[in-house]
Length: 218
Image 1 (cartoon, one colour):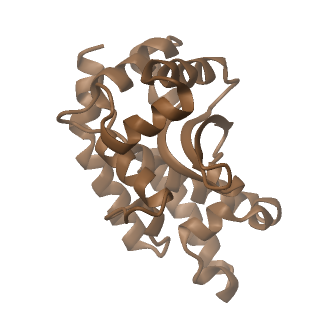
Image 2: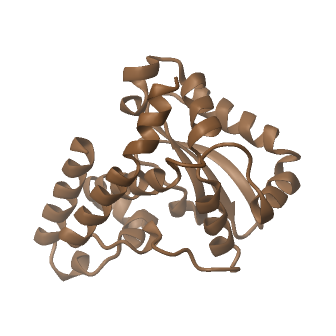
């Protein structure tokens, strides 16, 4: 919560001082913008961290999480990776090998019409490359170090075995493929002060049980 509150504070301060050119941008517009990443990296990085964290919280479920995906998502994973085990191994390998802090994403490439895995450092988000986020694992050290130290593998196993919210991931895939709309998705969250604060803190509180479950069973 402390990290996220600081990101929110910084974004709102920059936006309030930036005039009309920034005031009416959505979070997604900021995170997608290569121009803003170059011209205003402080705004971009803090906005992206807000977006990434809220998305990550919704990728976890305090009840019924973990296991294997079903339906369209399972079918698409088999098509693009051969099996769910192959996808899991690829995300695990990408996460473990990543240098420093960042995020490991499962995304949907609309041009190639397939799922892809990528690990991006810092506040990296695949939206800037035109890839639609489906699922993410937070690989910033503060997400796992207190309970797992440098054992990233066990942290990732806990995420897949007990926490991952496949229902949300499938909604995101349907949205990316033009087959549905994601309700209450982070894609539509505003950065204008209280709405973002409320959304982010609600997501944190909603996932408190999920995080507690992961750490208690580790």
